[in-house]
Amino acid sequence: MKLYWNGATRYHDWYKSKNEIPRQIFESIKALQVFEEVQWMYVGIDEDKKTPVNKDFDVVEYLSKIKEKKNESFSFNLGSSKPFDWEVNLLLFPYVSSMNQIRGINMFNFYFQNDHFLTDDGSDLLAETFKKAHTVEDTEFAFVHPENRHRELTDALDGQYQNPLTFGPMFNGVFWVVFLGKEHLNFFDTEKLQNIQCYQHEWVNNNEGLYIRMTKNILDSMTPEIEKEMFQLTRQFKEALLVNL
Image 1 (cartoon, rainbow, N blue to C red):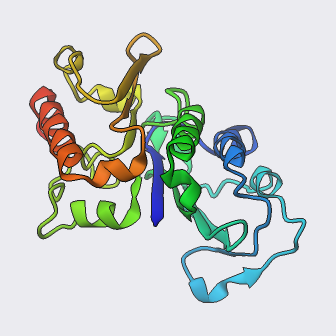
Image 2 (image 1 turned 135 degrees about the vertical axis):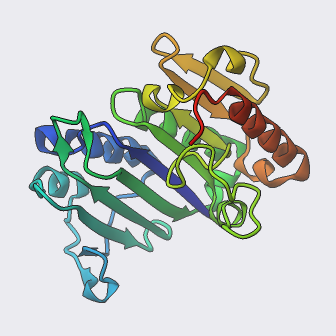
Image 3 (image 1 turned 90 degrees about the vertical axis):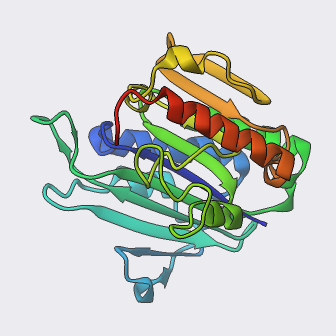
């Protein structure tokens, strides 16, 4: 089963200090033993430009050498079938200091497949790695969920999350694990979110950030019982909205 991990922000400068924030995200994910061998990559959106890379290719070192594009975005994809099938996409936009935000949305997309993460121990490792990768200092919104079910839930025609709570690329609804940074929590009356019911939740940085985990095992997030809880919690967020988006 393929899993989908997404992290995004409109406010954090992922280019600063030689792309320090995405480097830290990739360093955190090394605990999953993903980047032992990158087999291919391409820059931009043209998959036809996919080319093999050397066996000693270092993702973090490559990130440190990416130069900021002043008036345009930069993206790259890389992936491998070793040690399991995975693909990463990173999208970077320049930071506009006069606006105190990004000229777009910085985004990290990670698609991966390994049965170990479908066990209790593997799900624990994935959830803890997610928490280390995303903090109020670098991320506005992030989540992990089974990829096929995520696509069904966010389908624009008949998905349960067809109408995003905030912005489509970010908070469509509650998934297996979710992180909301302070810029996204500002959309909500957090007093109405203090009685959250789920497997785990944690407020961090004096309520500036919120982690939610719906189940111990990610597979259980697709059961009717847990999806009912996810939809109820999504409604709770909707009722806590301070603005109409």
